[in-house]
Image (cartoon, rainbow, N blue to C red; front, top):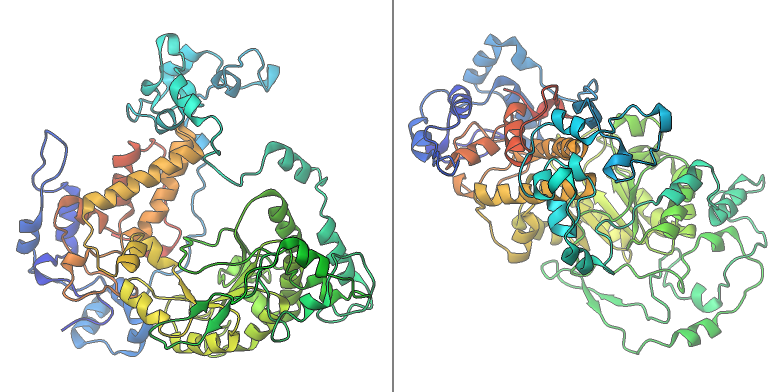
Length: 619
């Protein structure tokens, strides 16, 4: 019989806490010295099925408070065992707010001057006040050993900008520590877009620091909010300069407040009703699109322009939000905040400086730091501020604006169904609904019945559902609720190959080696973005360790008695089919660090790491 809230793992793989950690501490039974791989430990797993197979008291306590298992009573054996251990009554929860803040620069005492690294030793940025080393030989004498003989930056670009400070410098250092350049690769990269898009340039950063960036549209909108005769929703009458709005544009929507996302001269697609199994279908417009010039000539000024006109979607300027058969791993630009001025200006900055498909407002964040300032979920109970933010951002953006919300703030009081019609009227192009309230966090199952009700209320505006999706079966069931699409959050952190499973409609029993390859790709992306010097390596390691706190929750499909794994089911102690699979199942920080050392080399002597959430690691 399955224990409440515990994932059903086959008996031959189950283990005890002591045997599990002893096996990992000894790094498996047999090690192949030739290639460094650890041989399979399945025989060991089969011999470890005896003993106490129950969960640690603190872990069981958490499972009983999760989802549908919250009201189930404990068995007498569990109560007796918990009574013996008073610590079992207390569940590890919340954030580790006192985490040590060790900057990556602290891991390297003797640092080389940036002017020397960039081969401009005669032009030191700090002059006589410089505290960095200027002698390459002196620096190399104290530099930690290299982490490998292959530099990802040199392989990709033909030149490593970190030179001698690179922790993989052996791949591109010549005589007298000269930084070698691959001219062939450099020529291939010429004319190609940069590896990192949408970064803020130095000139733009300086403009922002000196408050010289022109927020013209934002100031225009905010000035109207500040007027004494301003009424709710920005509907006061006033004549202001504004792009021409014709009657044709005003009549283009079928209902008040509906959003027209047509590109210039494009007819709106019709959403045809369909059965829940088939999901929403989109019909192509019957008539061909009109030329852009014809549409522009049809637009006429309509006299006095109201505040409502100012914040309406401009059908001839907004880009179309096309999410059909597309996968976005995250909203391309997500913002959260509590004040119309900062949010509107931030939206205008993004609109003018970077390229995105849409901008998303995160009104689903439950974190105390954000909520107590009125942001995140706090905006759901501040409708006036919420409206001003949505209308203001929508006015300054040329791309669609989307909003993510929760069911509400309190557990038993749903607000989403009341807010969704207003959000549609304010000009949002899409809403994503997380099926839990702020108070629930992740302690209950997502309410997909309520999400289905809200999807009907939101129509014709698209509504995406979010919550508890960890397999293609969960995704299929969610789509049957009538939503336009789904958003995956924790499921993508726990099982990043979930998108492949959804696309191919199968359960993927991924091997530990394939999972390690995914981590290798992640570390390469991190080194490419943050750099291959000590600072970049440790920054990459920090994010890798944070991610491993989610990855360890995955249970290999081949070890489960039944499929699929449920997102709120925590694994008991089990032995994997090889040492690496067992190591990846550990929820101990020390073992996460071991995995990081496989990819990024040994940690510095002064290295410390504490998980963000208290429940994420224990031993």
